[in-house]
Length: 103
Image 1: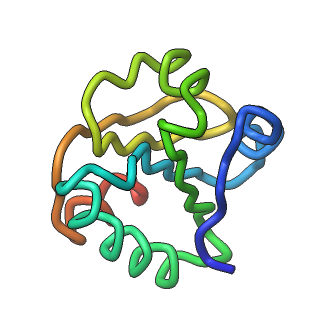
Image 2: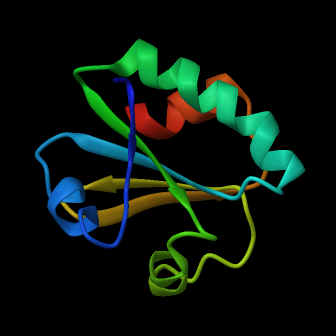
Image 3: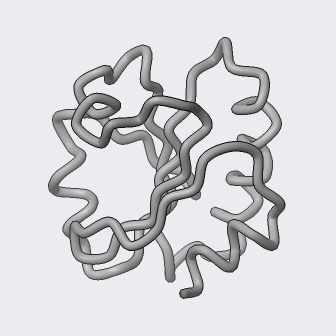
């Protein structure tokens, strides 16, 4: 499985992994999220084994949205060893997302 689902129960364990983690904060009712989702899926397949890619449904995980002050979706966040290294809000191209995870 290329894309993981993060919840409040597994989040801390998953992001403290040695690999870089890309997180897509989204909601099913969000039009721009539906535009970004297939791009995130493509990125996940291309970086599998090097970068962990996950999605957080903010409707189901409001605690995580609040914890990271996600006010607008889609929000993409890159974490390394549990620390945020990059954040992007809105629709992004595949190249822009790949650049985020390769920094």
